Image 1 (cartoon, rainbow, N blue to C red):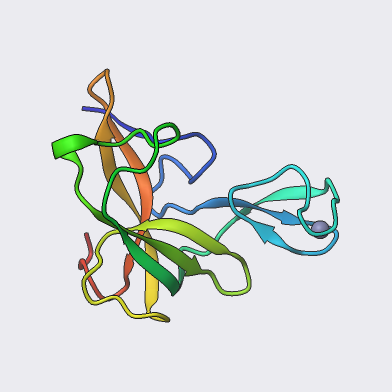
Image 2 (cartoon, helix red, strand yellow; image 1 turned 180 degrees about the vertical axis):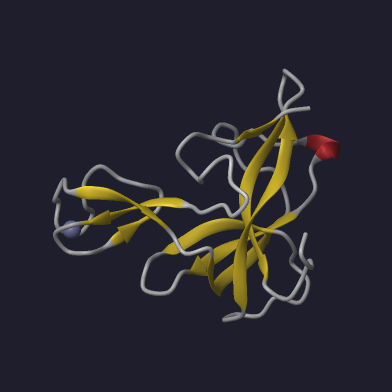
Length: 143
Ligand SMILES: [Zn+2]
């Protein structure tokens, strides 16, 4: 079974140490995720690709108890759906990233989180589609 990214240009792929792909404004320095063509603060079009820090701190979170609206959601529905954590991780001096979380157990606002890639679904060709998530730094071992 092949592994494929959920979308192009969201994270570095393939990569042993994945990084989210954002953009940074050359004029004012603001960082965005996902990457944008023009700056949301100063409207400059001088946006350059910027690989985000793989670590940050949990800023807010909740549990997704039911499948989100589709589209854009393309994951499991019905009995195959498993509730999962979603939240915002604040990357130092960069940007808050809306992200899936690997767990909802033991989360605390402000705790250290790190980027991981996780299986999301199996596509029609039998490929394992992977997406990004954040997990507590101290959980999950070397995985
Ligand atoms: Zn700007």
